[in-house]
Image (tube, rainbow, N blue to C red):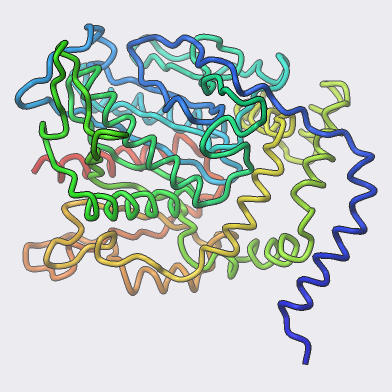
Length: 467
């Protein structure tokens, strides 16, 4: 009997041969020049690691962050704590889809805590989704923020804030250690780990504060976040990094150097997280997963082919492309302008379509059974180290099978019920099912509704961390 892997390999070879002549006829996506210097940013706001690929991100500073513009402070004996809500999107991983959600969450935090609160928000696109094509594709304008909730939006076309990697001595496209992309799950996890270490150093050196992370995620961002925490914990266990001011060394010229990179290990502090519609187990069993898996498995050139087709579409006049986008997605500049513009940028980006499908294939292959232990899920003995998790699942979610969701809740979680000191499972992650039947893609039309839910969970996580 012919084995399934043999059949898959045969289909792979045949499909490649059939598709090659057609690929050569389609326009190739323009490869951006990613070897320019990191463009100037305000020194008051956190940059990204210098070896990152081009990346779009949003930063919503806390009031205390905005009011503080000092030169790098001396290292305090007991550094003050700042909190950073680090948002990781789903797939497609464009942060532009989440502008109303994150903007409203920032506003709600200010309304709850006033001008003294120290909770900033940083949302970052996944690697490979940078939107840096033409001026018309970068004409995105976020909702005008109120003076009390000023938003630093890092977008293509904003020459002061768009992250680009530094120059490389090589002329090829491998301008970072991550390579030119597309990037699989493992690379996305590695970059989030490096980002959190970099930000931990930056906050300590530039602001003299000890930053603690609340991870906030959507869809596959939940898997990436859990894996990132696991990798950080594994590194801590193997390298023996230390807590508190022991992370910092004072050099001769009163420069604070964080123990990290070449000099040691940074102890990243994650106090908890909120995972929205998380695809963290058996994604291929979901309704959409059952469709995507055979297509992505048995038609290997599909990501490249559809990227070329998207590049062909971008040759159309912008008004025609916009009309087609509205016709097929329902997004419009008047109804949900952020989703319309993000999707337009997605189609016009040099590699976004290929990156989305490449990542989706990796999701179908890797996101299977629950692979985490007590270091993530916790235990009665406190192996979770005080981290508080909230996971919010949908009903009839086309990317999360009800059976996979219910199995995970039964084995790992607890429902939202009043707790007492005698409860045996109060240490378990809180796992909820959406009663309003909000869609998996809540960020399109329900961002403000979700922000009202999330702000309470973020407050609970920080309260537990400070208890």
